[in-house]
Length: 306
Image (cartoon, rainbow, N blue to C red):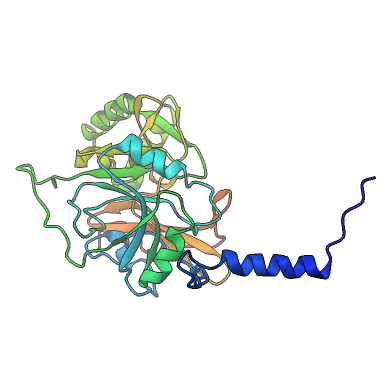
């Protein structure tokens, strides 16, 4: 067996001197040590007014002033590629990368309706720089304090870009869009005694439709609000390969916010809206994906008051 060479005291001294020399810049000044990485604020629109999920957290952190991004683009495939480069990284905090439009998270000197791939949110620029230095292709941008003015179509729908990010931890079981739309049209012609009767019949009909698979982490982009919000927001648009599809909203990160607790991370998500009242469900977020919390009730119940 080959013996391991001994390192003498002089060798250790030489290595120490070399390490000190390597830490000096070319002009002879010492290079300061790297800033320790500070945990990001959680992803989600908890700090932006005008969203159903923005009031789901009981205790909200201070609003972020900076975002670390790996891409700002108009292309869905480019955003998906940028996000996939970060998926599974131990450098970023739970819930990242987060794919969101710049209409929802306005970025200074950036038009609305761009797609931002965000890997961290911070109140402190130095903390943002520390993460930027550890993530390839990353840069720090300032979050604007001024929201973009909504633009409305004649039919009352908002004219804007919408983005759906399929859960990056698990593939999503979907339904082909054509079959789903045909079912929705059929149910719109029928009457039901109660919302519970409608939901039971709708769920049974959905269960009988063909299935497809939307790849984990895939990105869907649309400018049609009706495609983005379907069936009381219980379903979200996606793609099964090249085919249009819909998936259960809880298979995506649409209208979801994360909460960093001392010993766990939770995800709160709008899973239905009825009579302008959101139903928000909560899960524990793990390396394998969402985990049901025993006894956890929705923070708010969807339905009509009175």
